[in-house]
Image (cartoon, rainbow, N blue to C red):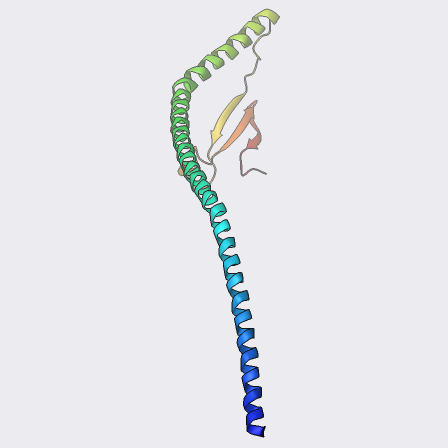
Length: 162
């Protein structure tokens, strides 16, 4: 055999070994692809029911949220109505209740004086409104009040007095 025949023979053997290796690799790859397909199919059989359950749970949660939202809206409406009613009741009953309580306090004080025989003081304490400041617009808003006893000012009472 000459060198060219040896090269052709070696090339043919290498090609046959390469073909066998390619066939074995293809056979292994086909087996892996089939195994992968079985795994995907098993995964699909497990996940499809889970996704359906998750979708049902999400729909149920959305319905519950809508129901809770409706309850909250009703609660807010009731709270607003109660607030309006309590403000109206306070406005309607506050003045008469204060008058009744003042009348009661005066009656209790009078009854106490009658029981104990207390007399009114000989010299009543008078309170006079004295305007101080820049002008007549201070009266009623920032004017000073002084307690006057025996005709003399005792002390100034007000926000600006120190």
